[in-house]
Image 1 (tube, protein in one colour):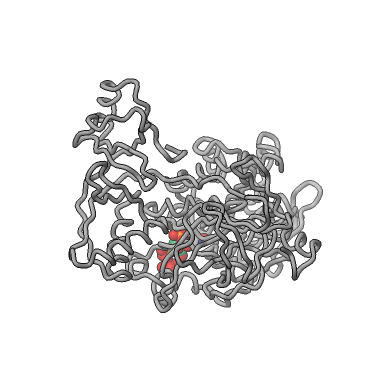
Image 2 (cartoon, rainbow, N blue to C red):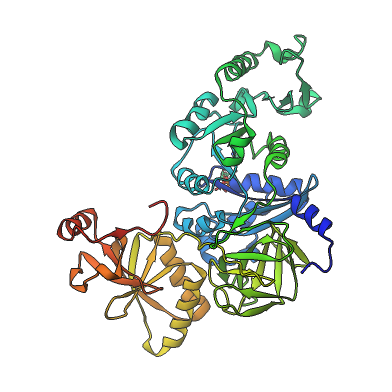
Length: 532
Ligand code: G4P
């Protein structure tokens, strides 16, 4: 399929791809650090562009009112730039826990993750959840301890917390010299230098370390107690800390840890340079048949990890986000959709350069392309060229915890109700169930906000006003159809079916579930998502 570039060029292009996501708890500084990276990549020219978008200053690039009102990033987007010889793809992930479903799927499409932690807060709930999803994938995880310009926790405690809470070894690549008002700089173990904070006031930015790992005694910094403290921490790390192990990093068993302040752009470049040199180029992917698809294979392949309708209200479009897993994507190419065996011509594609969407000329393994979709794709679909069928495993489904019954307010508008419902469910915005015998619609979500977004989008994009009656928090447990007897259902364990027709019970609480287990000890119940 490679017409316009040679095999050698393709290999080179793939080797320089670095595709990753940033995970963090809201407010840890993900947007700020992303923005600094975009500045280094020359995508934006001034700080505040991305933040402005988030706070609603740049209303035109905000595609949803809710996003502006709530000040949270609802959608995952993709940003691409060239930096230090690498083509970087950052897949943004919504930090708000209500959108973790979207985030989880995005994490299936990256080769590495950056975990941003607020040094004052340490590891927070959402970081822990997202970390577990990344850890399961066995991909490298790099840590940026942010907000060093403020007083935070002891750096040694932060490293210990990685092991205690996340069970991952931390290896400090650099180390803070002071914090908050007393921040003097970073002791950079990797580059064997000290990086000064507010260097413009002092002249030079970097002071090389001598063979003893210290700086010349004539430097006034040596008289500062925070420098002495940092040296004794470094001694401790050298003697008793983890040893750097690239093989462990590659498996996600050790995380290289960097310190800095995204807001004052301190330590970010050191982090980015080091991270990009260690992060892997696109890796091979396994198919359901046990075959391995190498990124440099001649044939193109990819999978849809996200579908989003109406990203730009001016063009009523729907975009399927495809992670290219092998070969090169070219506009107008014919691909086979593994699920149906149908051939689809990919005429209309877009790549993501910051928030400007540009027509894609060529994308290779590691890149993300957005395909304008007229309803061909569903999440998890595999597409490929060539004779050999390529089918990647299904993406994990997140088990919803909140449920509502949903009906159209105006029964005369059934058509737009069904259309909106079908599209939003296909997009993965929300999960749809039907009551087992009566086929009433029930929606499932991870967080309340997902329902609000659904209701809002139904009204504004499909002109369908919907009525939602809460059923409350429930635990979803799938049941083997062979073992199912509909009389097992009650109001405490509603019997419904998912969109594939599989039956499941929605248990009111753990008590109801235990009661069920006692009554029907032989009936096997399973949660769907792998972290359940
Ligand atoms: P998020 O995307 O992870 O949610 O975090 P975001 O970057 O929006 O940062 C959250 C808040 O933390 C912002 O302040 C931001 O300016 C601040 N922040 C980020 N990095 C640093 C840092 O290194 N040092 C300090 N001191 N603050 C940092 P805000 O007041 O919520 O927003 P804004 O009014 O400043 O835009």
